[in-house]
Length: 135
Image (cartoon, rainbow, N blue to C red):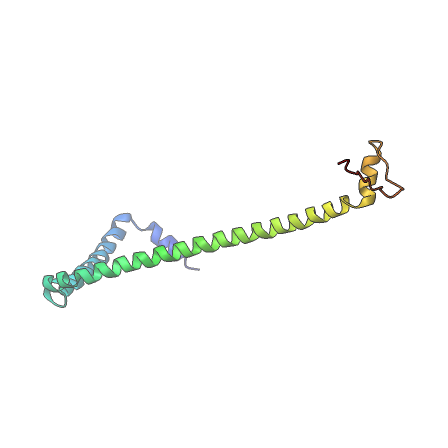
């Protein structure tokens, strides 16, 4: 078996860097040549670039507004989800407390609670008192 990685690591570092230099220069040179042809010699001139500058600024501002709008929408959606969960939780708590109150306000439950205080349930119906005026 031939291990290619071992062969590369055993080579001296100077030779490896000398081989990489022309590749980097070719890449950087090609890139600079492209931009030089694009901006200086050809397609885009200084006058054209300055003429298009307000439009580019408008597009950048529009993009920032779009991004801010999407962030605000996500924030509002999270807030709505949080509040809806809280409403469901409070609703279930309300229903359980209401059921507990209804149970505790039954006549038999009230009688059990006040029996410890010595108060007993009426067996006779209440009597109506009539007061006559002495005028």
